[in-house]
Image (cartoon, rainbow, N blue to C red; front, side, top):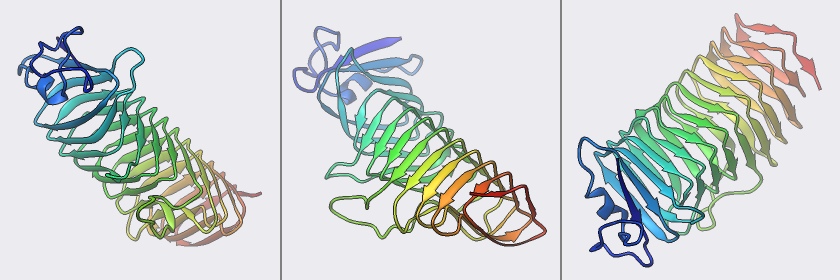
Amino acid sequence: MQIYWCDSNNGNDLNDGKETRPFKTISKALSKLENTTQITINLETGIYDIIINNYKNISINNYNDSTPEINTCEMINCKNVLINNLILHNIKLISCENNKFINCKIILNEYTEDIIITNGNTNILFNCISENCKIIINSSNNIITKCKIINCIIEINGNDNELIYTIIQYNKKIHNKEEYDIENIILIKKSHGNIINNCFLFGTFINGIFIEDDSHDWIIHDNIIETDNCGIICNNCSKCNISNNIIKTKNTSVILTGLSNTIQYNKLSSININSKYSTIINNALL
């Protein structure tokens, strides 16, 4: 394994990249990568960019107690990349597979705005904090787990994605420079996926989870949802399973239309169902 150090403040790309003679940029460290090896890049406190294309088997970490910040993280056709314990202001993954963001803090700054995952699959956000972002997932089999997502909106346009063990809190409009007209915090446009064991805390006039027309086979289990508006809206959906949730709202807890859906063992404030051939059993009113 190759190991290099970077220091954007005191490093120099003419150095050898050792701990006492760090590079200045991540790109210089990556230029040393050989096709058959793995590379670990340790970052000192400073500001960096991660812009990589067709790389694999890379680990980029903070070093000791350093607090490196990544202004731009753009990865194309990358595989098995680990981003660990960094502060990031922008993430774009295009045609990437099996990449992980662990223990990161993702915060909007004045130059960037989104987390975007397009094409590829099996990318993971684990134990991250994300604030004031718009998270757009345009690919399949991605996982957001054990994260804390604050004042963000999530749009899922791919199949078989998972949101699990995550706290999602929203109480204001996002983006200082451009405010969105927010109606739904989680907007789902494709089929097959799991939303399990999350806690959703939303503000006034905001819906929680909105599943668009013709989506199917979503599992929404064991969540806590609190919002002044509607908790879950399944609009003309089929074969969705909404079970064992606690949904506390001032408006309708669940609005469900479509075919062959299951809603059972939930605790709800109220319910509005127009879904044929569906299973509706053992729900209790709060």
